[in-house]
Image (cartoon, rainbow, N blue to C red):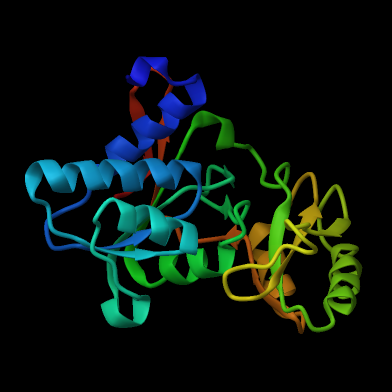
Length: 239
């Protein structure tokens, strides 16, 4: 029962249910990663069984792939799909300009590739992720393992020239050693507190040799669906 869920989960489910209304028969869908995206995958599987809806999903992580396969959702790689109609994914933070921080689950590289290979990206989230300024959530940066320590020093030096409140750079731990992404890279988390210019910081970080991608998603999301604990949802932006 939905009423038995914690308030945050009710909000996530409400956002996922609202986003499901944008899905049409025959669509090729990007399937995001994280707890809110997992709600969307679950509800999508239910709708397919109930209505005979036909879609093809392109998962952004091995975790999402396993979940979708378990629900019988037909899947393809992005190369096989070619281009997507719609991507539904969560976010760790978003601001009024629909800039995002993503990658708390470590899938930011694949998530950004999928999000930019579609007609529309719609973010699903709960009210706790809405912020006036990005940066309270640590910014993930995906880095190649070769020379990771040198890359981290370059990142720390770069942050001295950007409008941020904190400059701590740490390598994310995994189960046995550093965290390793699905693409075989490591993740560095930046504790910045506040990011004054997300687009500028994103471009600067991506120019550092060894940086593969950042968790800053600027100018990518078309809309954010915010689910409330009472089961309602509001849409920010244009679908």
